[in-house]
Amino acid sequence: MSGKWRWNTAQFAERKWWQNYLKHKDVKEYLIWKKNYWQNLLDTCLKHIQISPNDSVLDAGCGPAGMFMLFDQHETVAFDPLIDSYEIDLPHFTKSMYPKVKFIKSGLEEFSIDEKFNVIFCMNAINHVHDIHLSYDKLFAHAAKNGFIIITIDAHNHSFFKHLFRLVPGDVLHPHQFDLEEYKKLMTDRGCEIIATEHLKHEFFFDHYMLIGKMK
Image (cartoon, rainbow, N blue to C red):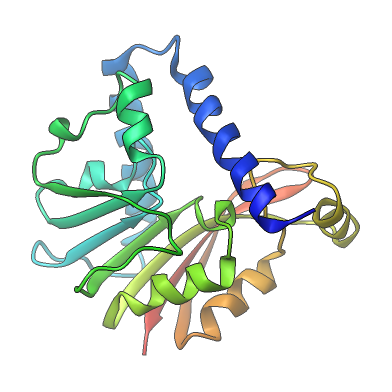
């Protein structure tokens, strides 16, 4: 089964997932809840790193309610391949809600901007991409020296299911299937020191982690 087919299927499923997930959620209540959710994760990050008001921020694979919600007063760029679709599909997101955030329609593989960022967030997005190795290359190419990269991922707990899901699309939203050590290696191979690993949630197939890295 080709990687491109998996990615296209995942993108279609992602768009439908957001439509179904938000269709009965009050806009104001959801945005308050989501902002509090990100604030809790940011508070965990701030145990390990410092973010100043002058730091530039990149929100990679931001979705319709990403980390950009907390950084709308920073120099912030947020991008997602479905960003225009979210604005059409969902009353919970319009670009005008965040006038200081620069939104770009792009996948990670195609993303290119003449700027490096002090803080890069890629929250539960990296295993949705088509070419994961190119996506990591792009992500790290936009990190400033001594900049921080924060990535959240669903990592396999069991080798058997990891290899099974690679053969059969048992998890259609995630075209890539890795365990925690493999995700760490994708960062360290690109000159990043992992300064913290936060275990966010436990489930049978996957555990949810936040990896916090610093560029050398």
